[in-house]
Amino acid sequence: MPSPQVVSPRGSPTRRRQYWVAVTFVACVVLPVILAAWYLWTRAADQYASTLAFTVRSEESTPTLDLLGGLSEFSGASSSDTDILYSYLQSQNIVAAIQRDLDLRGIWSAPGTDLAHGDPVFALSPEATIEELVDHWQRKVKIFYDAGTGLIELRVLAFDPADATHLAEEIYEKSSLMINALSDAAREDAIGYARDEVELTLDRLKGARQAMTEFRNRHQIVDPGAELEVRVGVLAGLQRQLVDAQVELDMLRTRPGRNDVQVLNAEQRIEMIERRIGAERARMGAVGDEPGGQALAELMGQYEVLAVEREFAEATHRAALARFDAAQSEARRQSRYLAAHVRPTVAESARYPERPLLLLYVGLFLGLGWAIAVLSAYAVRDRG
Image (tube, rainbow, N blue to C red):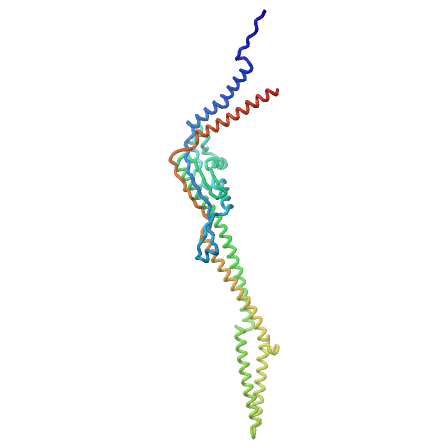
């Protein structure tokens, strides 16, 4: 009778699966974690952090405070200004601007330009393009933005503490320049509108004064009002003379042994005075127009229209000049500015990269990936 065949435990399917699970765990999790730990503690260079925090502030004048003495009210800037600055801090523009002043490739390629023997993970290639430099900027410059309060905090990393501080100061300077540029654009718009208004009102005033000058030259009258007063005075004098002449004529007619020559002269004098009075009245418009030209009353009406236009042009021009002076006065103030409540700090110890935390992340990521892969393989096997 044949003896039963004994199967080796190592050759059983269950043991083989356990063996390959252990092998894959070591190959996919343990060895990469050991490699990551070796790299972090032997190859990864120490990095120093400089912290900077600021907010955008604006200075606004209120009418109530102006009445109390021209004080100013300080308030936070609108969210749009801070949002613009937050976007600018992540843009290629600020990277290119700082690259022109500082050698970012040299700062972030330390501690060595040979990546084969340096730190190829956390360091930047000295021949990096501007796009690679912007990507590396996102890793080295962390921006924390609180939209509710408008506060922006930056953490700048570099392989040298002095480089980190210098870079943080340069970021603050470029951010201030950008905010000042926004303020300059807004102020230039306000001053430009005021300047255009001054030029418009000045042209109107010149036109009104030119019309007044042409009127005076055409009619040879400086001021029709003064001319009218003179004419009224002349007319009043003539009327007095007429009354005196009429009285004198009556006396000559009633005088015994009158002289006809004197009576005739008195009558001619009265006739001449009446004719002169009629001419003066005609010139003032009291009796209609004479062939000699327009009535003085009509000229007076035209002059008053021109005078009103000139006075209105002068008033609007004075108001435009006042607004222009106010706009210039406002432009002398920096209406928007950066207020740094945390100046760039100087690190005394290297806290980055955070090796234990990074190693933990690597282990969790690899472990979860390995577990998902093993479970997926068992699921496929069981369905087959």
